[in-house]
Image 1 (cartoon, rainbow, N blue to C red):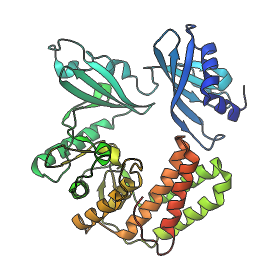
Image 2 (spheres, one colour):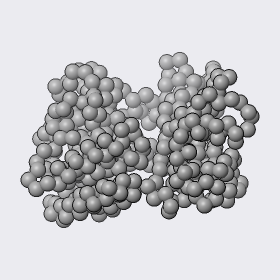
Image 3 (cartoon, one colour):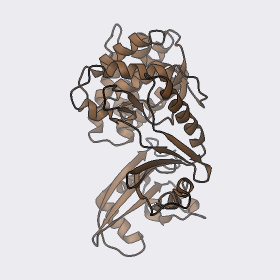
Image 4 (cartoon, helix red, strand yellow):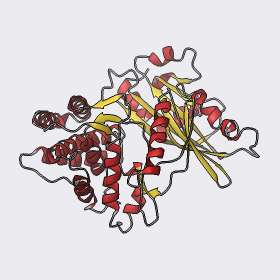
Length: 414
């Protein structure tokens, strides 16, 4: 078997993988090219049992394509994991492949990809024809999002590897009801049901257009205030959560990201360690927040805007709700604004609007600390997800986090 780092390099080389898959996949169909996506890698190559997972899209010379989910193991562990599995082994790379839609943790996918079977519970026996099914998002062994279209009717399903969807459905039902009573509360997609058999939540089409599209045009004057009010309305709710995002949680994340970056780029180890130390020291000087419900994964992609005079805000994706500091949501949103779409002043305008709309929850020092944490997280993600130009992006994010930790620094834009 090849040395593990060499095997990982091969797995990430589309040309090398075209030849490797051609030799190991059954059927003998000629592969024209291979595209690599959904890459998740661990900087701790010698410890993690699956240091690399990814998705291969193969284009065939005869037309069409095939998708495979791949897990790379170490020390020959793929052959042990193969027992009882539907996977295809690739021993030279210590790899297992699952041909789409097989997924070891999402066995419900074949049923959900059937445009008639998936909607049977919703349509009864009245469906005149199968719905067209589109896969919108797929996180191997975790979740998938699908869209079903039949004529003018569109519904969505989000399916999980466990039963977490039941609670997510309850969250959407709560906010659907709240939106009918409070014009400042965020609108949401209409919840249609939770199906335990397929571990899926079902929803109608969410209103509005994506915020990232709105940001690419003339910025509506009232948008920052509307967004701040919607965030404040979410933060004012009381719903059960399984996660707690207190400073201790984030300090553990900071140290974990420090280790990832240091292993990936040893030349930055001292610099990242000093940054992590500065974030930890600052944590012990922060005022106590008014903790409550937070979105937990808030960014522009989670927001829509109704294209009418109300400019009502729409929120998506309630998977990561937690108990925490509202400044975390605000910092995450500002930090992850798309620099190629959002005008430079958007972050500052939203911060100022939130400070005015929810002064009891706003704290500038807490916000600055969360901004530094989020910048470090984004620096780490640049490497983990291998985004284009990840080294430059990592450097840019580190520099911003360092500036936020500098004494007397007060800027709060991304």
